[in-house]
View 1 (cartoon, helix red, strand yellow):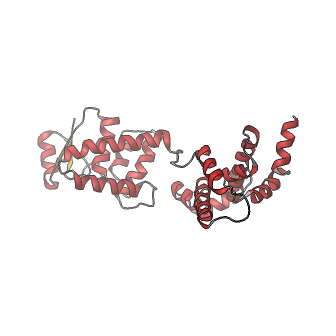
View 2 (cartoon, one colour):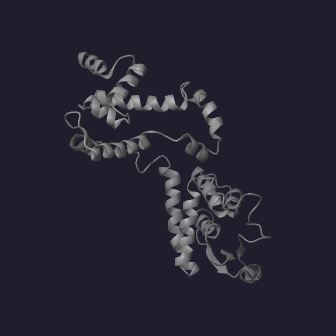
View 3 (cartoon, helix red, strand yellow):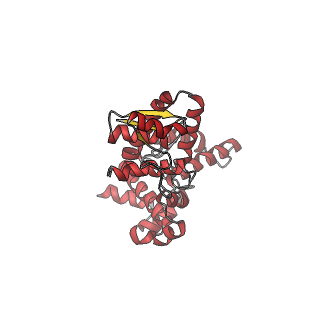
Length: 278
């Protein structure tokens, strides 16, 4: 089937052909023409017009053509609906709808600027949406920094941070702060960012959080995750307490020991000794 829309596509007019070719009409031929030629050529070529005013496949209210295709063709794949929010945010300049919307807009705008042939632009865009769909279906919980390379961190710790005596060079202090900032970022989730990705107001999320997460506040729950990680390291590794404190994002061993005892009821060294007796 032929599908026709306006020339010089960026967001919806690349996202929609991708959706059509992948899930609606696998043999779809997509045609780009000047705006005032879409309807006449659609009639002449027996093509389906989309993403122009006054046709079936277009924007409705605050939703874009991508949303309409999902509804029209009863596409229920959750990954596609995740993708729809990103496309909608990028296509309507509501980048608050999804964290990925502004990035999609930037990539699409740059791609359109670099590629002047619309069919070539579409083929490049197809790869982008293939990648986004794979992310939405399989990789949403993956983070670039989510799995710290513990051996590498420990090497840095042992070479630069674990110095003998009380005198620590300024460069080592700065390096420690930089690495500690990275660890804290990796192990501490941001309530505001989470609320944005869920489309839930942060104050509501904060207030309701404990109902569904072991009757714990957001901060206490994140602290529990850190302690759970520490318990696993105490059981399964030979790392010393300073190294475990470092790997679980605590500022130092004393801070780690204090929080650990508060949560577990005994300090880390006692916990490890009791494990050895079992």
